[in-house]
Amino acid sequence: MNYEEALKHSLTVPWKVGTCQQGEKCWCRTIIPEEEILDDEGEDIYIASGAEIHKVHAEHIVKLHNESLTNKVTRLEVINHQDEPIGRVYSKHNCKNVETSLQDEGRTLKIFINEG
Ligand SMILES: [Zn+2]
Image 1: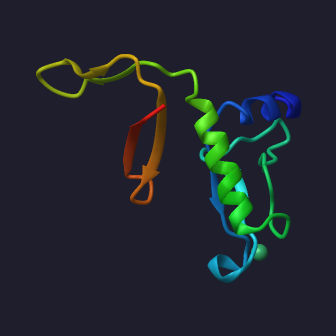
Image 2: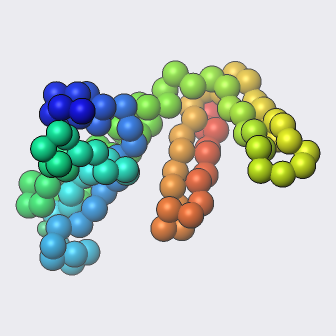
């Protein structure tokens, strides 16, 4: 995708907070898509790079952005295609405030159904 398309795409995917080259001890944080987005030139799409934004603001922006992606979600379904019995494992309708969270260094996906 070209740069314009990559920018638009970046608004539709979850973001995460990262560190600059100085690591955790630095005041700043980066904001990047959870999965790398490259444009035609092979350039990474960054939301914010190093020395631009404080850790506190980066975490706040990422939280709000990621919540905005699931704002319209009202139904949650978990489908098992891995082994028997194949099919719907969990289903809940009328969900109001669904939030996803990748934890455990990306190995656990948690889905929270919050109060309105
Ligand atoms: Zn820094």
